[in-house]
Structure formats: C-alpha cells, structure tokens
Length: 582
Image 1 (cartoon, helix red, strand yellow):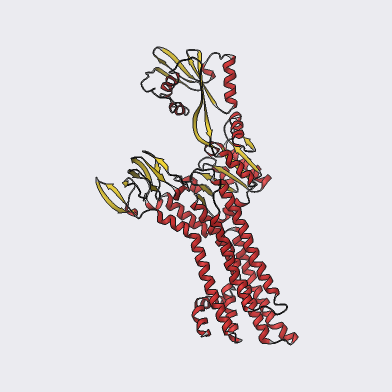
Image 2 (cartoon, rainbow, N blue to C red):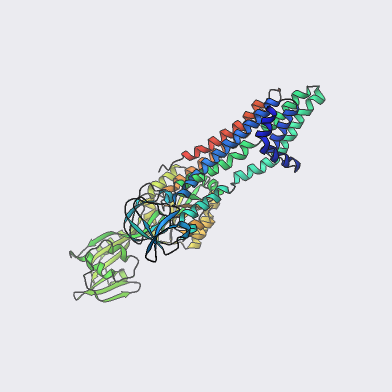
C-alpha cells in the first residue's frame, strides 16, 4: 500500500526528478526523488509515502496561494463584458467585443458595464472607475468625456463612440502589463535562483558525507546514517527559498493593480522600496495643470467689469483666457469691435465706443506705485497677473495660477513620515512661482526655470547624492528625467498610452495619494522577501545541525521543507492586506 501510494502520488515528481538526475540538473524534485527512493531501499516505506503525500499537498497549497495572488488580475479580466449593444448602419446589434469596430456607437444602459473604451456622444452619468483607477467614488461624465472598458455606468443612459479595438482597451493593456510584470524575475529572485543552482549540489554532497563517513570511519550503523543522509536531502530541498520571492512579488503587484497602481515589474517594485529621494514635476503633478483665476481686483467700481474682460478674452487664443471665461457669465452678448492681439503684451478692443485693454505691464505707458506694489505681491505668490485698463487708465487686476492639488501637501508629509530623505520640485516655471508652490506643498527644495535637459542633470545629481531616486511626472513631458531616474512614476496612466509605455510605475487615476501607498507596499514587499529568505535558510540550518547528535528524522525534515514552504507563502499573502491609508 505504501509502495502504491508512493508511485501514484509521486509519479509527476519522479518523472521530472529522474530526468533531471540523468541530466545532472539538481533541483528540489531531484533531491526529493533520491530521498524517497532511498527511503524505500532501506525499508522506510511509511515515511517515504508520507514525504510523497506531504510534498503533493504542499505543491497544491503553493499553487492555490499563487492563484489567490493572481485573482485580482483575473477579476479585472472578468470586468469587461464579452458583448455589447451597438448602433451600426442605423440598426441596433448585439455584438461580441472582438467584433466591435472603432467608430461604432455603443449603447450603455444604467447598471451596465462598458465593453469598450470610447468617448461619450450622448448622455450624462456617474461612472464607477474602480477597476481601472482604484477610485472608490463614481466620477461624473458627460459628452466628450473619455470612458473605459470594465467600468460601471451607475445611473444614466449613454451613447459612446468606440475609440479602441478590444485588444487595445486600457483594461486589456493593464492586464497584459501586469501579467508580464508578475512573470518577470526581481533581483532578489534572480539571486535566489542562482544561489539554489549551487546550493543543491552542495546539499547532495553533504547528504553523501552524512550517509557514508560515520559507518566507514566510526563503525556506525549503515541503516541509521543512510536514513540521516536521506533526511538531509529532504531538509536541503530549497522549496521555501525558491518560492519565497515570486509569491511576494505576484501578490504585491496584484494588490497594487487592484488599487489603481500599475507596477511594470518585480525589479521596479523592489527599487521603489529602496527609494531615498523623490523629484516631482510641478505642472499636472503637484498642481492640477489647469490655470484658475485666484484674484479679481476691481479698481473702477464697474459692476460688469469681469464680463467686459471675458468678452475680450473670448476672442483671444491665450492659454489663460479659459480661466477667466470659467468665472464670468453673460459675456456672450457683449459686442467687441476692433479687437487686436498685441504679441508679447496683451489684447485690446472697443466696447460701446470705449477701448479696453488686458495684458502685462508692457501694454501700459506707466503704472502707479500702489498698483505696482499689488502686482508684485501677487507675483511673489506665484501668480500670473493681467492688468485691465480703460485706454491708459488701469481699472483692475486679475491674477491667475495653476492651483495646487488639495492632496499634494498631505502626500509630501506622508512621504517624509515614511522616511523619504529628500523631496524636490523640478519646474520650468519662474522662481517666484516655484517658491510659492514649494511653500504650499511642503517639498524640501525646488529648482526653477529648467529645460528638460536641465532636469536630467538634476536627477543625475540626486542619484549621486542619494543612490536611488524616483521621478514623478506626467509621462509625456520630462521623458528624459523619467528614464534616467531609478524608478519613473507617471501620473494619469488611465487612457494615456505614453504613461503606460514610458513609466516603470503608473498612477492610473492621476492621483498623487497613491504614491505613499506604492512606497509603503514596496517596502513591505522587501521586508517580507527578507523575512522569507531568512526563515527558509534559518530553519534548514537548524534542522541540519540536528544531524550532529543524530536527531534528524524524516518528520523533522518534512517540516523544515514543506512546513516552511507554507509559512513563507502565507507570509507573502499578507501583502494583500496592505491598504491605501493616505
């Protein structure tokens, strides 16, 4: 019965183990094969059968653990529906996702999942984007807004113009990249694999020495010491050591993806855990990247002054014009005559026969001292100031600034609390703006008026000083700096192909609060990998020391191998519990 259980339970093990033995490729299955056959030869049939059964159980549990770690990615795959209702040639058709083409109009009813990426052409709704971005709160979407496959239409009826094929959707790319990342070997895993390659033959030699030397030279019992040698082989199996790193990496990358962070490989996960300094781009990273009117100073007393300015700006192509238009109302009816844009100075035009001007100081012959003082104060706060004039008389000031994200200061504080030694803002903006944003966000230092090549130099200087440096940017600009940093982190990976392709890590929701979570998860992963390697080697060493007094048994050997394998696997699964706590 023992022999039958050994053959039936260990058949897959033996086929691999014997092939490896013939090729002199000594891995864990080779060691187990020698140990079990040896146990049968010396008559320890029962213990040989138990080794086979426990090995099979540990393999099943190990596979279960790895499957559990990958479950988050499988749940992503199941998010996007396999079919959708589309309008094609004026007819409504229920088509499989792979048959839907770019340009088709997809109908999405309340409570339905979106099958494809696209742009809303009709309707307003709240969209739950948790599968893509990790956001827990649904986002309001209307006409011309982008939506993603795998997200949930919460309340409204939508018509969506399909913009990507099934294989090119954001969720498909995320799944592909995460699967690749989980399969990639991290530095610690490569070290363990290399270590195991030399470690296994050494264990075989030690087992041979234990089995042969005492009977040959000290008249010990052959049966007893062969048994001890076989136990050494079982103890020496590097199962726990080999599984210690990959299960940790797979679990961590899966957890990150579920929380809206795409980590493109185990090496980047490990590097992020060792980061000492982080450099931030300003626009669109620490700030919202959209200019907003922060101050409106009316010096004339005209109640309709803002609308008059908006009427002028409505004819302008200046990037700051939109910030004024968003704050004004009832300007569409105001007629502007003889509108002129003066390059480098501003704009002017006539309203009801009176000339109004909006621009910088160069647009006016002279500026009173008290007004100049106000302008300087606003500029020192990092704001761009536009002067409003009636002819040459200054009648108002408008200040516009790229607003700081509400989360930026809290994120920087959290990073400092996590032990990041240096945070620095790198921007092409002027000194005054950089100083103001630096003060608002709490970064330790800033560098202003930088060209992309200057940012690259600054990153290299930081690497020389701190070793490992992360760069956080938008994935489109700052490409040289992102590439040069130890870890490049892109904001807004959802729907942004450039961010997904260029960055090592992408924060899918353009959400800076995910950065401390990523650092925390990476550090926890490094910690657990070290724990697992220490545990697997430490217990094996203790078990091997039991050979000296002759106390090592196959039962102890089984615990030192399979038991520790289960322990390191369960320890790695703790990474599923790391939460986004910012």
